[in-house]
Length: 255
Length: 253
Image (tube, rainbow over all chains, first blue to last red; front, side):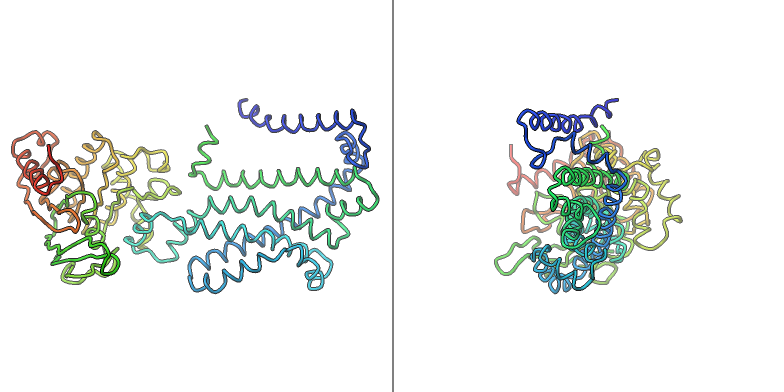
C-alpha cells in the first residue's frame, strides 16, 4: 500500500505537468502547429497505435543492440586497461581522443561504411554509449579497498581469482551507474542514426512529420521516446536490485 | 620460527620517514606475541613485513631460516577493518582462503561451519556481512584467517573498533581458539590489558622510529579467564608496561 502510494508520486507530477500544459494551451489559444495540447497528442497516438508500435520497436531494437555492444566491449576494454597498465598508457589517450570527436559528425561516415541498414545506427548508438561504460567500470575495478588488496595478497590468490571474486564485484555498483547513463545515450545515438538516414523508427517519424508540419505527430514520437527512456532505466534498476542484494542502496530502498 | 635482526624500514629517500629502526625479535613456534606501543610506532609496519606485504629496507627477517619475500604459505591475517567481502555471505567469506588457494570450497565447508560455531555464529552462515555487528564481523574475519589451519596468524589491531564488552568476549574466544590450535600469533594492539591477557610475551615498541624497548614474558596460568585481570600478578604486568609508556613520555598523570 505504502509502496503503491510512493510509486504514485512521480505519476502525480506528470499529471500536474500535463494538466497545466492542457489548460495553458487552451486558455492562451496556442495553435497546435506550434504546441499541441496533450489531448491532441494522445488522439494522434490512439489513431494509429500499431504503426507507432512498429516504429518504436525498430528504435528500441537499435538502442538495445548498440547498448549491448557497448556493455560487452566497454567492460572488456575497462578490464584490459585496468589489468595491464601498458594497455592503459597505450590505448586510453587514444580512446579519450576518439570520444572527444562529436559522434554526430561521424554519422555520415558510417553511412559510407555500413550502408543504410541498421548497422550504422547501431554503430552510432554504440559509440555514444560506450564511454560511460568504460569510465565507470574502470573506476569501479580500481575502487578495491587497501585492506581487501592486502587480504588477497596474503591469500596468494591468482590474478584471475582476484579479478573474478573481488574486482568485478567492486565494479558492479559503478558499472550499473554507467549502464543507466549508457542506456540513455544509446537511445540518443539511435535517434541520431535515424535522423541521418532511415525509412523507419521514431527518429524517422519525427523528421518526416516535421517536414509536413505535423506537430502532433512529432510530439507523439517525443512522448514515446520519453516513456521509453524512463522504462529502460527502470529495467536496469530492477536488474540492479536483483543482481546486487548486498549493496547498501538496495537496503535503503527496502525500508 | 621467526628471526628478525636489526630490521629497518624506511619510506622514501634520505629525508623520508623511518618506520622501523633496528628491530630484533625472535619468535618461537606456538607463541602468542603481542606488540604494543604508541600510534605510528611501526608495529603494524613490522607485522606487514612479516606478512610479506612490505619488504624491510635493512636488516634480516627470516621465517624458518629463509628470508620473507612475499606472503608465506599457511599464513592467516586479520585486519583492523575486518576486510570482509560485502558481496559474499558469511560462509563464503570464511571459505575464501580455500577458494583462493585452490583447495576446493566443498572440502572446507564442514570446517568453516565448525569455526563459525566456535564463535557463536553458526546461525549466520547465509547472512551478508552488512547484517552483522562490528564484533560479529570481526569474528567472521578470524574464522576466515583460521580456515586453512595457519601456522602463523598475524593480527593488526583487529579489535580496535569494538566496544569494551564485545572486546572482552572476543578476547576470550580468541584465547580459546589459540589454546585449541596452538598456531603462532603476532598480535598488534594498543591495549595493554588485552596484550597481557592474551599473550605469552608482550613486546613494547618505542615511538617512531620503532625499536623494541622491552620484551616481557607473561608468566600467568595457561588458561586465561577474564576475572584474572583483577589479580595482583596480572596488575604487576600491566603496571610494568604502563611504567614503560610513562618513561617514554607517552602518558602522564
